[in-house]
Length: 435
Image (tube, rainbow, N blue to C red; front, side):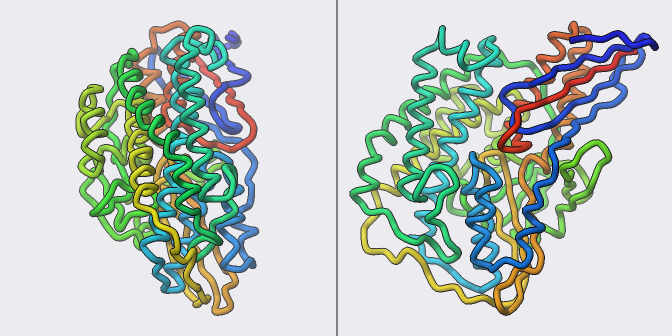
């Protein structure tokens, strides 16, 4: 809805933006045909997780932090357990790490499938929602539901349930799934791998706006595999690389007046985390099959068009299915589910790659294992400056569009990031002022 102001400017308001998690707003001002300012306003109230973690036992973060998000709880669990194990000087077994990776595959599958087909594809196919899209593309929606279910079932088998898994603990798991339990998932995982590869080819046919951004990409890196549940170092396209334990020296959080969520800088500058960053910094660690699928889809070994993030997510979706099958086929019964962990006074950092990008936790505990301080840095807060940069570029590039089409382009620019503002309310107030 467009309102004319007394000074001749315009305010365009969108009462609700579907397919974006949380409460947020966007404010764009134009003056003399140019973009004057852009703000992504997040007015979601604080949830105080870092505050009420203080004073809790060091064993509690996996269960508490999982409740931060119903879509990516494993990311919070993985980062918190790694941080605590780092503090306590504990190294888990290769089998525990494999099972953590398998659980993370489930999260990537269910989250990427949800975003690709339910939240993002309607933009490219010209529908307001997946419900409308289903009328004309029932086969695509049915495939999406199969993919989502495969991810949920995998999380249930390993984590105890699909939402907020209960089988994760500092030191490993409460129990390991059996070979029989995992083998029952195999037909769905095979189907999912084939569906995901078909999805890469499908989304490659979408009509993508011509828009490139010169981001500083930041992601985890591991010498042996594509980063998922962990990496040995943080790398950036700026050429900087350092151990995960040093991330707090490079990433600084700060407040801005128009957002309740913290912004973040990397060596004093904006940066980008997420699928595009992972892909561009770790293409060589993808499997041969997914590398080939990506190149056939028109991607290079790097991608700087945010609108093509949907292709990258389908490549990662196929990779997660391949990894899940690899781990399931190699699994044997009889492995210890956990290693003992005794508290040690100290401070440590844990990081993983959530579907939306790099997430890291920092904790300080005392000798009795009581948490003295906690810091949780999720991907969406780190990406806020990049989102605003994309909105500015979109507004400048399509300034001659009418208000309706400009609003649509700006909404797409936000959804490229699959932002997780919260896990409840879906609300965006979009205001465009022209003068």
